[in-house]
Length: 147
Image (tube, rainbow, N blue to C red; front, side):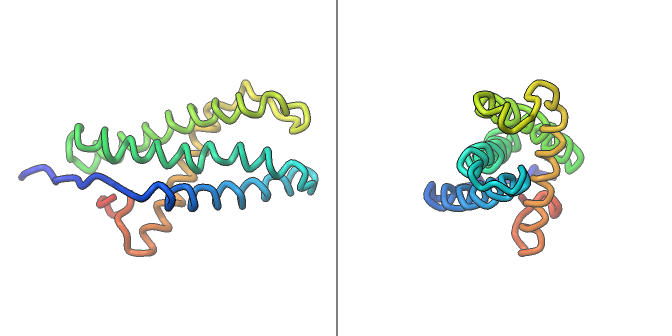
């Protein structure tokens, strides 16, 4: 059996920026509403949400275009590698969010030093939901092994 010929994922930059920016905007203002209902935190929360939305896009691109073609085509290996990439990527994105939030950490009343594992697992959850949306639209996804 020959390994699959993985097609690189490509998308126009403006499409990526529009989608990830819209996700960050909606999520940012939802987080701001959750922080006492004040929308004054909306811009900062939106900036923080760019880490998982735009940064997450680049984590996924790295897996799809660089790592996936270099590892065994076995479904189990692909799933395991992708989950590890999502976990480590989530930790790195969480660190980026924490560093970005440090100047405002008192306003947000959050601890930026103890939640690295939470960031990794949260990013896995975010990606599973995003992949489910692709699956429901009949697109290549984590669930069908084509994406």
